[in-house]
Amino acid sequence: MRRHEISDEQWMKIKDLLRGKRGDRGRSAEDHRRFVNAMHWIARSGVLCRNLPEKFGCWNSVFQRFNRWSRRGAWWTILKTWQKPDLEQLMLDSTINRAH
Image (spheres, rainbow, N blue to C red):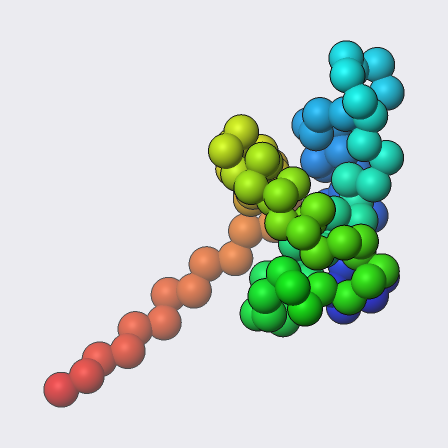
C-alpha cells in the first residue's frame, strides 16, 4: 500500500456501500477505488483538485464526482463505516495533568 492510498481492509469495508457496482441499475463505475484514493491524496496533501496527479484521472471529473457524492451523502456513509470502533482492544489512560 502506498502512502496516499486506502488499505485493502478499508476498501473491503466500503466497496459494497457505493453505487455503480455490478447488479446496480444504471452505469457502473469500475474505478471507485481510484476515486477514493484521489480524495485521500487530496486530503493528505492539502492541494487543489487541479493539481491532482494524472494517475487519478481528469481533475475536473474527480471534482464533479466529489460534488455528486457530497450532495448524496456518500462521504458520511463512508466515514461512519470507517469510524466504527473496534472494541476487541480498548486502552484507557488515566493520566492527570494539573496546571497551576
